[in-house]
Structures are given as C-alpha cells and as structure tokens.
Length: 239
Picture 1: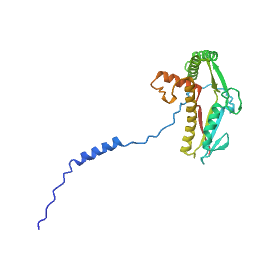
Picture 2: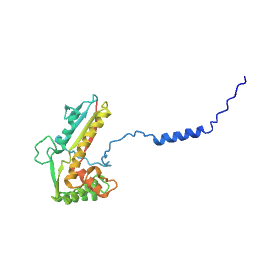
Picture 3: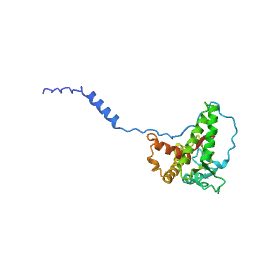
Picture 4: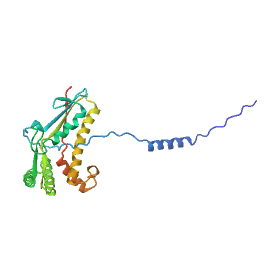
C-alpha cells in the first residue's frame, strides 16, 4: 500500500503572528511601578552660617523603629495603632496657645506687623548676600505669610513653633513595610489637619486642589504648608 505524503505546512506567517501577539501583550499588560515618598530636600548652602542652635526637646517628636520592627516613641514602646493619635497630639495639643502640655510644641501668633519686620530683615540680608539661598527662601516664606495674614479676617493666624519636627530613626534591619507605614500615618495626620483647615477657611476640598496646573490652588497649597507644616528628618541608628 502506497504511503501518502503529508504536505508541508506553510509557516511563513508565523513570525508575523508571534510579533502581533507580542505587541498585544506589551500593550495590555500592566506593570507595577515602585512609588516613592514625596519629600522636599533642604536647601544646600555653599557657606552655611556657623551658629549653635539650641533645640528645645519639646519641639521634637522622636520615633524609632528597630531591627525587630518594634516601635518606640520618646523611648517608650508603643503599638503602631497608637502612633496616629500621638502625632495628632504633637500638632494640636497646644494649638489653643494655653501651653497645657509643656512636652509638646507651643504655638505663636503671626500677624502683619511681625511679617513686615521679618520681610525687612531678610530683604536686607538678601541684598548683603545675594547668593545666599537661605535668605531668599526665608524672604519668600514671610511674603507668603504676610499674604496669608492679609487674606484672613483676623489678620493673624496661629503657627506651630518653627523648630517643631518629627525625627524618624531606623535601624538597617527595619522592614520596609514598617518604614512606609510610619510615613503613611504621619502623612494621614497632616492631610486630616489640612482638610479641616481648608474647610475652616472656605478653600474647598483639599484633595481636589491641583497646584501644579492651577495658580489659585498653588497659592492655597503654599498657605496650607505654613498652617500645617510637614517637617520630617531622618537618621539611621546603629544595630
């Protein structure tokens, strides 16, 4: 019985099909992108002023995370669920200016007169040292503060101590998950306070502000950063 020969399969179009499938998967597949933490770096000074600044520890909230993922605040062990309340207290306990808790930052009143004095001072300093970015930065801040005072019915506002800062310390073995969670909690508190401040001032919904494309929203955001500043410094602790 004669064997029937099988005809050859034409594979000439297989390369085109494979190429189209490759394009399809490239277009439709989503890829995870590592999200960073938005932080504004301090201004680099070529000739920083040599002066000893006395730090009052009531203005520093020290948060430490060790290599065992244990959390310490002011050297006391706490649960991560308690951190948000502690950070909120750091911002708000003395906001009434009664200084009821001397272990937390105090607040001061900023008015137009104070702003004008500081603007004059830093204007003169900027003229004396035009290359000093620190003076220029401070001058711009006080101009924004003056505009804020002028926009408020009281012509003044309450500002947390300028030295108030959250100091975050981590050991090299601290898990990335805990590190991110701490930052998220701090950011959540700041957002809550800014949302409340937006509502109080009649500036609309904080989360709908688009400062990168809207000039008015950018002005509001600059004012919110003054009313509710986010100051975080980080350092590594030895194992």
